Image: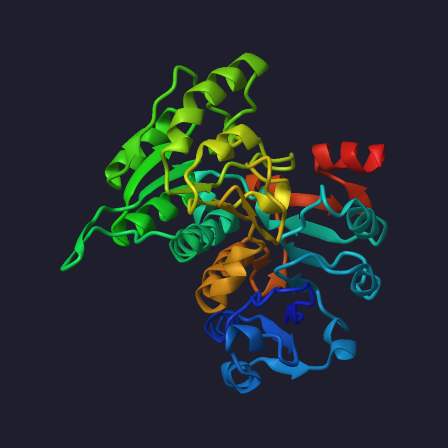
Length: 375
């Protein structure tokens, strides 16, 4: 029987858990054994008894990793935990290799097979395992709520005895999964919403949600549904065209990120200065440097009356549903790891091969190998 271990997350502010009791029950019915650390699900409001009732063992941290063949996590394991794992152990979770090169090296040295969930290929067959999409859905929703809370204006139009309040003007920059959810949520709150993305294909999706699309004479379609980095000339065209649009908005939500790279700057200091006092910017790319030149990760600044919010780990704010979605992603991945009750991953499978970060003592992901070599 193959044993999965699930630790309690220790990263500051992390409230999610890798597996929910429902998914534990499914795994056990399929022949897995599951062991969780005490209070692993507490911050997501899943009790130890709920896991025991689902068939899992609940143990202390010092017992957790003994004999585990698979470890499911949300955030990357710390190096002391990695040192407890046997060679050949499969660890699946978010890895952020560009932020944690020493951990990547530790996993390679320990001959751990690390599956970085953020590297799962964005292909049709892997949609049910796409952690980036599931967690971005949560982040986009929460971002719109933050914008409404931090704004000095109502989002919806109101007709009152004191007169009519016009709806807020909200702009979403970056129409990926998070951006689309931010558009939908801001629209539900009653705002007038504009959308901008350097990818032309994103315009149709934004329109379908009722947003007005800001179109520029540039296109930056990249691989895997991401945008490529703009040239200097394209950045100049983008800045000049967007400066006027941003200046007229009551709220701007930015979501543009490039995997493994610093986030592109979309809003410069001079653009913020054009915005009216009481306006707000919510920068979802704060953790990777920010789309706004003034963003400070984890902080809310007020610059000339404009609030610039740099939230961190927004999916954790909705820990129940974020954990539920994340656990289902891991559950679907688990089907690629086991055959006839035995651990038998096909490392040639394009999904596993795409997500594989380290294996058999090597760093198998080429960009990470170059990064760690450079470090």
